[in-house]
Length: 474
Image (cartoon, rainbow, N blue to C red):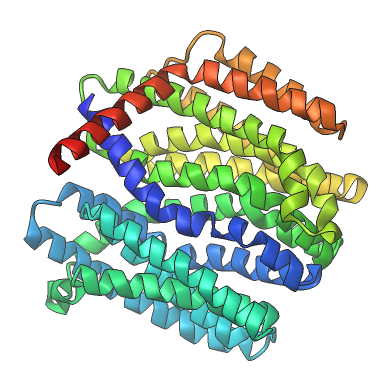
């Protein structure tokens, strides 16, 4: 029970912070679709996509290695300083090499905002690294505050640059870069990171060990990028940037589900690493897997049921075609929930090669399905390829993980999930108001029924916490 409470506590803290950044693009969707034409929005989405690819390649996924190594030495200040110092040495050297290569490449390949994009990449590299350091040393609250600063900065700067100054795509990219920089600066000052920087602490053996852990995550990261966002490149090349703008809008809604999963996964990966060798690990991992799968399945089907009412309020009519691709992308996001649950086990056991292998399989499937179908069914091919790739990865990891751990699911869970999704999706495409209302009511009842144990436990926890707070006040 202590393990579950610890997981819940960390998840709540991270949620309060990450919701400000992970869901920020959704909250700003009305602004983007009102002030940016589809071509502009498609261009910014493509740039953001490539930044998410480039940053892990620059660092060779160093930030994930730092997190994992700091978890193991949280109570040893000397070891923390050693890990941090070597991390900083590698980070600076990696950025220096990248900047040199970037200027060489841009001498021959010209594109808009190249210096701004470089600034964005450098800032995001530091931001991602510092966030993982905060998690690694157990400073979850500071992690959350940094995310809040980034989120608030993104909102205010987007309003300033896009609405007031009218800088369009340039303003949107600049706002993202500055906001990430503010979040990184907070962590650097709050954790007093300069105290841990000692270039004399360079340890070649430690660096090799950290890279041994992180390098297999690079192809994994690239594969995830391919599964998640290579669609944008294919869409832009074949259908144009305007089509990519439509697809980017449809992706914003299932991204909410993925963002919530990402928030949970941050604390889940930490708990998995701490308790992977516990005697009751099979029961612990099974309980969490069942609870999370049911919760996110209901969130996904709930999103589909709500979309006919929410979509017209948030999205400009010029992006109306985005409505049709959302259910398929949501289904893929639900498959991704199970994938991430399994991924945490691999990471906890430091089996990063297995993570990379399964991700590469998914990436290959995604590209094949997308390229083969996009000329025939348009944007549906991009959505379908993502869902198919996630499904294959989920099934593969389920059977592969049986070699190392036994995770038991509740009887009938799969059948119930298939039935409720089929029901919601069929009604979704009817675009009939009365059927949409019926779908929403049925999904709400189903969700409460499926998650009644979780809801009761949450209610009791909140009640006891309020009692404690009232007792202190009294």
